[in-house]
Image 1 (cartoon, rainbow, N blue to C red):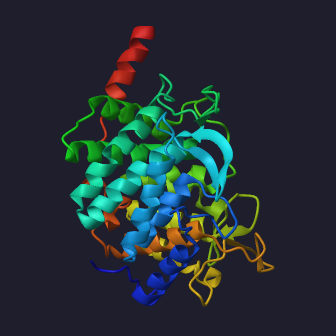
Image 2: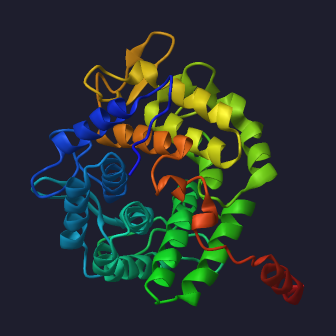
Amino acid sequence: MSLPELPGLLTADDLVLTAGTIAEWQLPNGMIPWFPGGHADPWNHVEAAMAMAVAGHLDEAEAAYRWLVENQHPSGAWHQYYLADGIEDPKFDGNVTAYVATGVWHHWLLTGDRGFLESMWSVVERAIDFVLDLQTPRGEILWARHEDGTPWSFALLTGSASICHSLRCAVAVAEEMGRERPDWELSLGHLAHVVRTRPEGAFAPKDRWAMDWYYPVLSGAICGADARRHLAERRHEFVMDGRGVRCVSDKDWATAAETSECAIAYQLAGEHQIAMDLLATTTPMRRDDGRYLTGIVYPDLVTFPDNECSTYTAAAVVLASDALSGSSPASGIFVDHSTLPDVIDIEPLVHEADQSVQ
């Protein structure tokens, strides 16, 4: 397995060192907190597991997946946040729950381990069925359920976009297992359509946040020339040239995680040089020990949160490096969607439904 490397930016040894810092902070039970003493959420936990696996820490990655298995709720979901000794936030987040499918498909592409895939199939199936119970007739996925099962009343664009990609990975897992789920494929078509078209009222207004800008591209819902136009429309609001991506449009706070994810979105859109330039702006956030600061506020060069390094930030840099270099067998999961099932075009169905209403 080839290790990620970007000549002139990050060597394979650099990235192995960074992935090793994630493993250092992993708890004995497999949980990966944001930082020592901090909480973990299953989405960033999976991201960290993928990054460790890419850099050769397969045992640690599989320990992270075992933690997910052991902590999956009977409903198929996971709670929002966990601490070393229990649950911090009990709500069940749809995006957090769906991301296990991305991790499992990534691990399969990376290792070809059939036993792992078979052991995780029921975990993925229950998780995705939980998530799709939150889908509205229009297609978006409501954010979460309260612990008593009551759904939240609104959806988030970033969350639904991320679920769109996770659902494609889930369909891929199902097909590989010979357990095709046409209901998932249809739900995916409706979800991708609503993420792409963003009808009025579908999503809570979060326009200040960079993720709402680039995630519809990162998810693959917006592709090709449309993706490039979409990114160009608001690039000036979020990208600080030479400094990275603002987490929110009205603050000069660049975060390495958002910058790395945005680089992946540009790579998927066919803008490799922009992607490379963006990833290069994370260099000032890299410490000598391989960890990454969560973010820097410009022009004062103040770290925020104060001197915080985070496992999910390190993971985002490792995965972006793999995506941009095309190094590992799983490197295409975010930037080469030929490794994923096609999305059903439900535009004709939507048009037909609109015509019948009229």
